[in-house]
Length: 193
Image 1 (cartoon, rainbow, N blue to C red):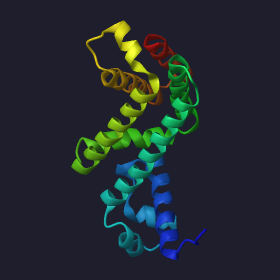
Image 2: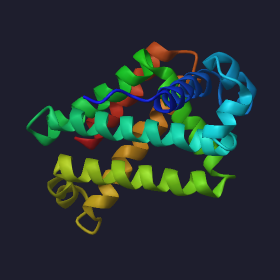
Image 3: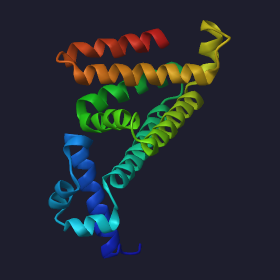
């Protein structure tokens, strides 16, 4: 395996630090200087790799998108039956809230920033489309749709599933009664099965 160059190591260190800063404090509360200081690099070195905060955040989002897509696909492929797949997807969101809430917060922050920054909007649209496609492909939603409303497409059902789980997860992470709030994810699971 080839060794990473100093340039790759520095760039990776900056990205990792940016991910940690942004996911724990949010886009609005982190400056390029904060990231440079926490990464142990000069600000000029950070701007050499990433021209501005938007470019750096965009790269962090690309990493986050890859992680979400891989985790969701692995979760859905871990079981054989559509009903079990949906249950595993709900479990994934519960675990995300409990064990990695900063990743979910970063996703929410990215969603909010997408309302104002066109390049982020395009990335978010790509992420939503990719996750919807993963859900559609892995949940065999054709059967579920035929039972509920045959006039709706499998893609529409996949969007509903993702929207319900993502939206409910946001409500849980914002709420103070986090343990009781998981009941809504359980309800989403039972309504979608």
